[in-house]
Image 1: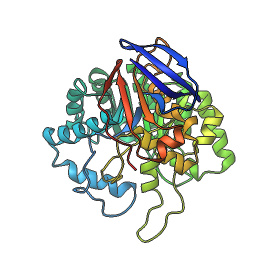
Image 2: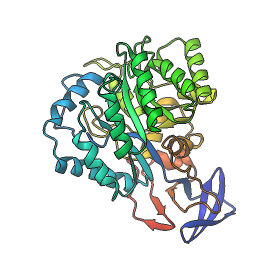
Image 3: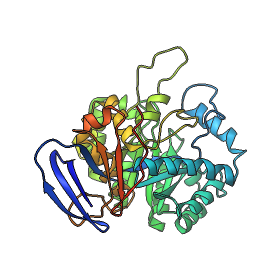
Length: 387
């Protein structure tokens, strides 16, 4: 297979594919017709509660009403319901050209949640690589009685990652210390929902950074949200980001859900948008990535399983040049998930996404055609990026 007039790292090239590998990349004159990137990776999704909207609508704006609406709906979940909703999500992700994803699975009681087992069963036949991360309240995972058996079960049945939600929990330094010991004991990565609010005193991230350095877990800890960094003093934020980079803690920014949930009140235009300072984090040396987070559920009624749509929204919300942030939906999340870092290079696997456009601004500004190549074979793509 030969694909011509491809934009790659600012140059126009032709890609020659032999079998399941990229055989040759040759320069070409003239403008590009297609923009190329490795199959994207989304590091932060919630397949267990996807497509609950509109049957589970929060009573009020904000994070905690969304949590309550989800908890109320969970009583009616069945294996068939979870498979139908998650299957729809996986089909959409594959049709958008996604290569891999990590889904968080709510785990709110000591017993194993139904969705954990159902999504584990679905992973074997999923059209994209599917990784699960349990999402436990830190006081449950850090409980000396409940935490150890949960961690042992995750280590035996999961995908090598332990996860927790931390937001101004009482006694959280001691709870986090237990969580890190559990991860160390079982050789697990860690993935946190942390400081998902607009109170400057929400500073759980600081303790996660300290414990990551103490346990030598560089490159094995991912933090999502960190919204409070958007309202903490600038000098303080700079110190946190410097420590984050030195400890090797990665940051996942979730533009859709944070824009929707933060500073919300009926009849009032939000002033504070809750985005973690991704420009400053990258400049400090932090690995920064983007995730879609919630899709059609109580936390965000819109959204899609399309990493390009996530990149486009982040570009608008945070004033990004998308061409400079392609790694935030490809190599950075792949490394954070412990997967091989994807690349477009001679000898690399022929797994790539082609999007019609002269450059990335052109490709993302409109409903553009795309071509998906998996293992050297072109597969069916959805017709367009959402307008």
